[in-house]
Image (cartoon, rainbow, N blue to C red):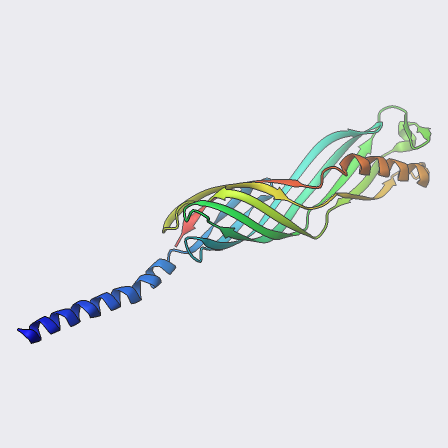
Length: 221
C-alpha cells in the first residue's frame, strides 16, 4: 500500500513539473504580433513582442503623401508633404490588460515642398511684383531626423488571435525648417525672397508637435 501511494504521489509530482515546464513555452507563442497600422503617421507594417502582461515592444514603418492649400502673407501656397518614418515604441501595461502607455522614437524622413503663384500684383518683401515677374516660387520644408514620441492606447488582451488597437499622442519633431526659396523667373530680388521665406517660417514655427492617431489590426501568434 505504501509503495502504491508513493508511486501515485511521484506521478502527480512529475505531471506537475512537466506542466510547469511547458506552460511558459505555450504562453511565449502568443506574444508575437504582426499587423498593419494606419493614421496620421501614414500606413505601413507593424510587428511587436509582448514580453509579459506588463511590458512589450513594437516597431513599424509608415508612409503617406499629403497636399494642402494655405495663405501666407500675400501669396497663395500649395504644399505637398511626404511622410516616411520608422520607429520603436516601448509599451507599458500598468493594469496588465489592453491599456498601454508607450514611449519611443522615430527616424523621421518627413519632408515637404511648397509652391506659390499669384494672379495679381502682390508685395513680396518691400517690392510689388506682377504675376509675370513672380512666376512660380518654390521652397523646401524639413524636420529633424530623430523625434521622440509618446502615446496612450489600447492593444487588446495578451492572448492568441486577431488584435485591433488604437493609440493617440504626439511626435515631438520640433519646428519645420523652411529652406531654399527660389523663383522661376529670377526677377524677384534675393532680399525679398528671404523676407518671404522668413514670413512663412514664422507661420509654421508654432507647429513643433505632430499629432499621432493610429489604428492597428493584426494577429497575435
